Image (tube, rainbow, N blue to C red; front, side, top):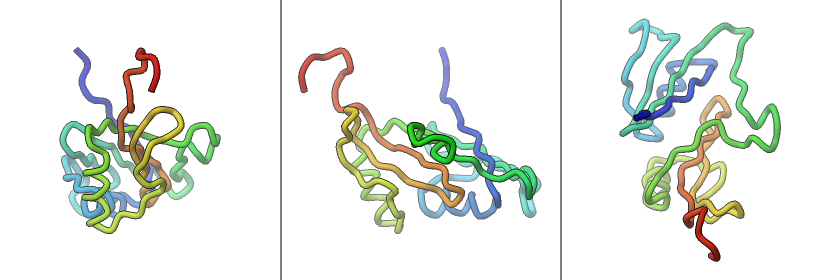
Length: 134
């Protein structure tokens, strides 16, 4: 049995990235080194976790959308009720990259862009991909 997978994001500033995920998205810090001014951290919420690492001033973030428009997300998080989660995020002052709604590809959800430009999709398929009709 496979478990959850964790994206690994290169960021400019680990403490600032951690602050976004904890204060805006309700994640917890699961690991951080060194304790003072960390260069690496793991943030998580429920079964989702993200690795954050600052490499060097010359190695910055490179979100997928900066490489090609057909790769708009850096992570997709399955959420049973994306509208409820969007309401929670909105109450925390989160700005949506794409607001909650139904997409042309059969998904329902929303997008959030973090401070380093990484885009996370929170949502789920509208219907079983094997079913016929809407």
